[in-house]
Image 1 (cartoon, helix red, strand yellow):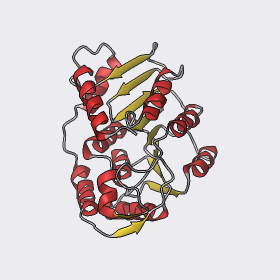
Image 2 (spheres, rainbow, N blue to C red; image 1 turned 135 degrees about the vertical axis):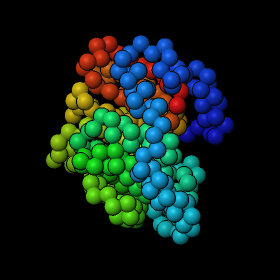
Image 3 (spheres, helix red, strand yellow; image 1 turned 30 degrees about the horizontal axis):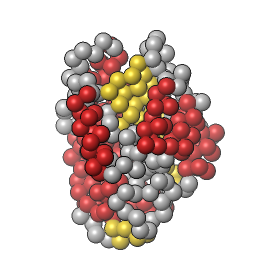
Image 4 (cartoon, rainbow, N blue to C red; image 1 turned 90 degrees about the horizontal axis):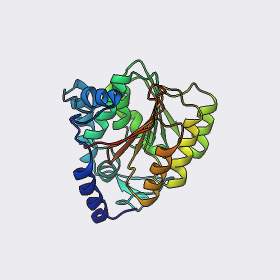
Length: 265
């Protein structure tokens, strides 16, 4: 993975070269619509306050738990015994990006949502709140974390989240064999090039024109950048949006030529 210094340099370069997030100079109606109605939606939705209170509780919880990491591991936490506050500070998606995912689900109204990498459940709560009529399936490798995430849903009175626990290499293929095509997928579970490309392949094979894939930390390492580049160039992908910390992929057949955007957010 890149060091904090390397990542900061990359972010500064991104910030000054990305297109303005205000929509100026965007000639794609689809992307302009996304910018105006989703990316720049500044409304403070009711669920924001409630979910952020749960995040705050986790950040203040010094209890130690033992966790099992099936992915690339944490840049901050290397031991198996970790405090809940340390997990929250390093693993939970920041509010800015979790709330963007909420707005995407609210706007596009997917019926089946998948998240790879539940952690403590705050992002799953945002996804579920975006469309309470949707079925959300969130995957977590560690049983204790999955249990804490389930508690998060109970605290927030969220009833449309299904928790699937175990190694993604086993649980995800089994799930995809037995269920309908997911409309919206957030991939935040294993920050390795080969695993990321395998997840993309699994979902691409089942994608419809309305399917949206969101990849976390696409500039986290050289391997993740390689994976993002391969995904962008795939013939099935009609549109990609790079927000530096998130990468968004569309298969929309109405976009009749491949488009790639880097937007400031």
